[in-house]
Image (cartoon, rainbow, N blue to C red):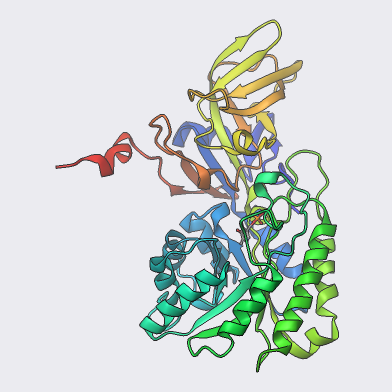
Amino acid sequence: MIQPLEFFPYVAQELYAEKTSVIKCAEKYGTPLFIYSETAIKKAYQALDKSLEGIPHQICYAMKANSNLSILKLIKSMGGGVDTVSGGELFRAKKAGIKPDRIVFSGVGKSVKEIEQALKYSQKASVALINVESLEELDAIAIVAKRLKKTASIGFRFNPDVDALTHKHISTGKNENKFGMTKPEILQALEKYKKHPKIKISGISIHIGSQLTNVYPLRNAFQECAELFELLSDSLPQSLKFIDLGGGVGVQYQNETTIPIDSYAGIIKEIFKRPKFQQYKPKLLLEPGRLIIANSGILVSKILYRKYREDKNFVIVDAGMTELIRPALYEAHHGVLSVKKHLGPTQPIDLVGPICETGDFLARGANLPTGIAQGEYVAVLSAGAYASAMSSQYNSRPRAAEILVSGTKIKVIRKRETERSLILNEEIK
Ligand SMILES: *Cc1c(COP(=O)(O)O)cnc(C)c1O
């Protein structure tokens, strides 16, 4: 499990990304700036991959966490596939050259157009698995498959009604959440579609939430999923090909303890020891997002102004909720550091952005050096996942640039947007 600072060390009193000076990057490419460490991404991916040695598996990186094309290509180079949740993501996956047999299509409301995209992903092949979220959606998939003369390989997304013990906005595995199908719903869909010529029932999937830090809800969910896998396999002419255990493993943002990879792999290995699994030999699919990318990135921002008051200190920087909305959206905590190390005293500081919203803060009460000055840079840690991917142009702010660093090598993987980017689709003739 990658730590927030593992690939962003201080070298001679200033922050580096691998072997590259963060200050030099900020000066060359401007701020706000996302910096990703290629080595961190590789290490996170390979650690998970290796922990599952001996179990036939495919990692399908949940690209909604960060769908930059260069990052997708990096995942692909290690043998990874992707979990997609929209037509736009299928489009990106295709651009990155990811093969259809490594693609899962998830999402709670797939449109007809998106279903077509998944079935016609490449000239010859459809995506490996479409995870179905309702009987009505399956009806729609069957109609499209018939019209296109394609066979849709589908899985049922199972909602096991377990409490994932995470923030309510990122919990997905309770009956009260909109996601997945209950067991009776799945059995009903099975009856309706088990002999359908264009629907191939090939998997069962779960994803109970994100930023999970406790292994027990996952273990319960995996067990329930395994039972349902066996039930479905027993009632079909051939067993299901895939068991898709989703993503959701939490990462360390501050001092919280999270799920060690070995424990995670351990609870997976447990279900693969079940006698019927040895007989049916399913392929395991995993959809990690945050685990791969969160601690592989930082957001660098420049200090514009300070407001030190008797009972409150604000530092106003040039990044905000447009670049990182997680604090505003889920009360998420991100570590922050001054890029230049200060040796003097520190004090609690609210790090806020320039956007006209009270909710526009990056960190509250962050322990920053009292002497941190205008024009200096700060780094918001663990900003690889759900940051750039959730960014917006609110307040008419062009989106930030992104760079990928490997040792001393730097690659610009997304150019900074310009003011023209803001109005491109509004110039009505
Ligand atoms: C978001 C999502 C994931 C990834 O979640 P992380 O917490 O980033 O690992 C995986 N599978 C599905 C279906 C998702 O919606």
